[in-house]
Amino acid sequence: MRASEQSWPMAADLYGEMQLEAAPPAKRRLRDYLPGAFVTAIAALAAAWLADHYAAPLVLMGLLIGLAMSFLSQDKRSHAGLDLMSQTALRIGIVLVGARITAGQLAELGPLPFALLVLIMLAVIIATVASARLFGQDRHSALLAGGATAICGASAALALYSLIGDKRVDQARFTLTLVGITVASALAMTLYPILAAELGLSDQQAGFLIGASIHDVAQAIGGGFSFSAPAGEVATIVKLTRVALLAPMLMLVGLWLARSGEADARTRIPLRLPWFILGFLAVAAINSLVAIPKPVQSAANTAAQALLLLAIVATAMKARLHLLLDQGWRSFAPIVVATLTSFLLSLAAAISL
Image (cartoon, rainbow, N blue to C red):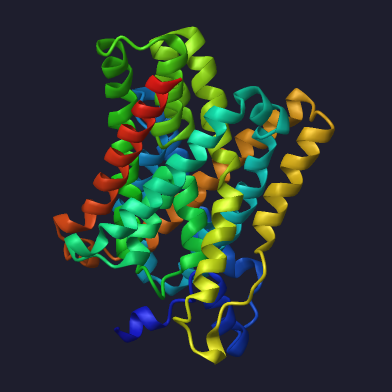
């Protein structure tokens, strides 16, 4: 690793935090964050404008603009702000995602579809990790791709990366995973409703298939309503139930990393839940016990989407393009395996309903 890369702070993972505690960075002032935060905000606004005016996937626009502006990360003045946007903004955004979830949604789905979703999630992750060796990929990259595909796309990828960290999956591989997941989700939104119609699926079956297999929340809901209004309602419930599985999945991944024995005694991951997972669960619990007013819920959803977009843009800006070029086609193999596994299992589950 070159000296310029070593100067970057660790990713916001539990492993990296242990390192930071041993050698804490110099105290930063508010103005140190402004350059990186400002360029990230400008890039995010540009991505939102393009997505709105050209009906393009918002996450994909954020990734492309962030990659195009990655040269700015060579300036050390941008580092503090980019770290803030890619780490703190991400975590707060994940907490606010909890405002979408209620226990009533899980009850409305029913025990059998919920059990099928859990099995699909576990099967997608296991199949992706198991196939990693066939394509010369490490299991942490496969875990990232499988977990993101099984839950909610880029948002889950960002949350997983905050646990796995750049010690195990470098920035270039992570950015490539984000690109692959976003493209796969955009294609699925277009193709899956057509396939569901060709297969003669009912509204309930099509809604389950689309909600259970498309990665991104907005694209899953959009794909469901493009089939029919009843299918869109089913897809919405199924997809939000998958989002609710984000916290349990992160817990399992954190425990697996902690017990895997990959780190030595000095840097072993502690058996504790990150605060943003606890925050996600707390907001979801509040929303289940006391109905959050619609304006507040809408504001929380908008804020969550904005913060996650900022995190995606900042992550892309921190990527080293020359390292991205070194990644071969095999780097996309875990995403392809995860996407195909998710689709086939979701289709089998939908037909059985």
